[in-house]
Length: 108
Image (cartoon, rainbow, N blue to C red; front, top):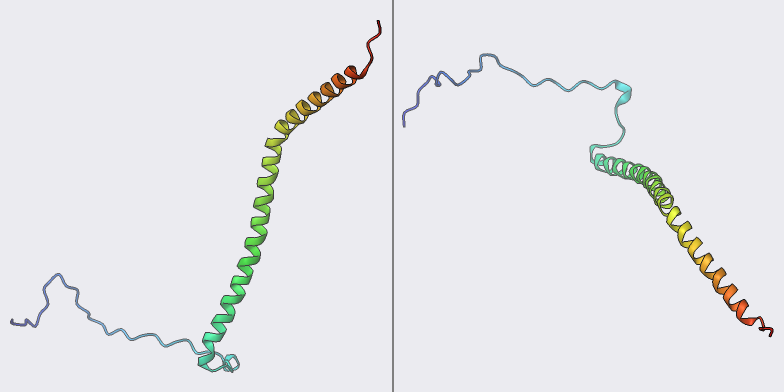
């Protein structure tokens, strides 16, 4: 396999040397006193704090959502409950009158 010195014409050619940019220098007072090995500990602490905040937010929002759903279902059920209660009360009153009427002695 022979190797040509020129690349094919459709392959871009790098004409400029690009060096990586140096990391911005931190101010002298901003240097961390924690060794690099502790970055995993800091990351774990941050993850725990974020999870705690997410948990609190989720708990509050779930409570609000469940409360709204219960309110909506209660409003939907209220007319049906009134009808059922009215029916039970009418039947109970009717039955009580029938029983009371049966207790009254018949006069001849």
